[in-house]
Image 1 (cartoon, rainbow, N blue to C red):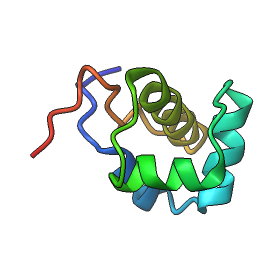
Image 2: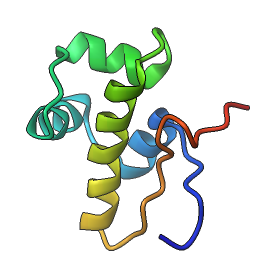
Image 3: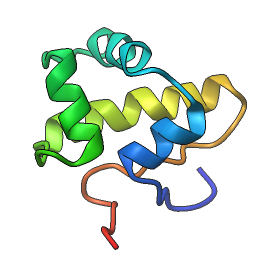
Length: 83
């Protein structure tokens, strides 16, 4: 990783142009246990995800960035600086 990731979950999802369902499938594959509604709330900031869920969602998004040939862009829980 060349730079500290700065994107929020929502920004990463928008940039990747993944559907909520695509992200949810990636999240589940990494061990996430929330339902699709909970994932949407976490990503869009309706509820504050705990550190573990945030990091699983961030990892799912970062894996998608890597799949597209990019670096990890989405910040993990302890690295994200909210505006």
